[in-house]
Amino acid sequence: MKPGSFVFAVCGGREHLARAGEAAARLRRFTARPILVATDPARNRATLDGVEVLAIPTDPRWSDAQAAILLKSALAEHLPGDAVHCYLDSDVVAIGGEVDRIFEHFQPPLTFASDLPVPEATLRTFGGHGFACECARERSRLERFCRRLERLTALHREHRELAALGDPELYRNPRFEGERRRGAWWNGTATGAAADGSVRFEQTFRAGQPVRLVHHFRNGRFLRIEEEGGARFEDGEGPALAWIEDRSCVGGGFWRDADGDSLRRIADSGDGVLWWYRDDRPRRRWRNDSERDAGGAWVDGAGDELGVCDHLAEALERRFAISIADRTWVPWNGGVFLFGPGARPLLADWRRRCEELFATPGFAVRDQAALVATAWAHGLDRHPRLPAAFNRIVDRRSRAGASVRLRDLEAEGAQLLHLIGGGLGDLSWPLGRDLAR
Image (cartoon, rainbow, N blue to C red; front, top):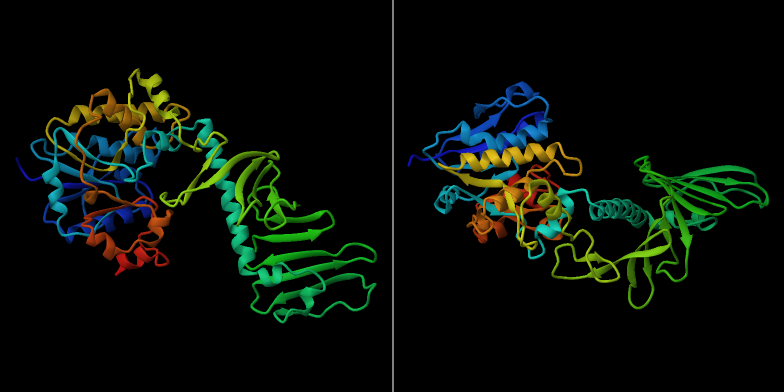
């Protein structure tokens, strides 16, 4: 059999094309095999320079993201059929000198790697990322609220010395620059700022009325306003958050948005137990688990995790009239796979299922759900998989991904890194700095 090629598939915006070009250039350091980039030139808003381009037209009814997904499953129809080829997503980066050994692991007609290689990554945990069930919507709602509160917490941590002060403590603080109001019955507005310019203040005084204090933070997006009736926080990302005093909570209260979401650390012992409340009713509790990459999970009263469900599997069974017997099955990852003679029918079926799900409300614009259906429809659920070294997934948004270093990955024998959270070129990330060198 003839030696095959490495091939990427990308189309559309400049950043996507540039990422594929960089991935191909990094791979070239480690292999003499042909490296191709499949694309639809009619869609591209920049040129692909320094790479061999495989031009494949795509249906204009699909978006650029959908077209790129469909390109990968069309490769077998445009590459020599007497060789084994390796497909790579454009966020897969070569770091080892043995990348060619991936071809030794080919099991016909095609061979995929597993998705996230952690114990809790199964079809049930992936479900909410591929199908918009109620679990997924609830998780998305909670994640958005958590991100708002994390920014608020970080903001106040950075400026706690000033942002937590009221009158008159504010004006006695050595970091404050401005003139203190004069006289017990002074009316008007006083202004000032932190010495480093990070926070500006406006305080309004009216005889016999509470003081109104507004904090303007440096980036211009955040306001904290304290006035009669309590404090509120505005960040331009939705209705203001209101501060609710509650002595049962650690910190003396909690922030609640207009939709009724709040996170409350209920005092019991130590730092208390963190709860997500909805409409003033306890909805989810955070359960610490040091073995989990996230450090724990949100669970309900019965201990069931948020986002762990069978809804994706059930939706695929209904849509394609198939049976998925094992809901703890670890999905294949579509970012790295080998395909050889005989793979064309399977890849065509994968593409057909992708197109069908693209047109079906509720399914995310991804290839994994259609890949799950294809594997089970063809009885490939126990088909051999590629070793993790050839699809070493690193999610920079996770605890492990935030601190991983290139030397550690090289020591474990990783050959191809799959940066699913981005980060290539981000010098604020330790691994990003390693890869830049």
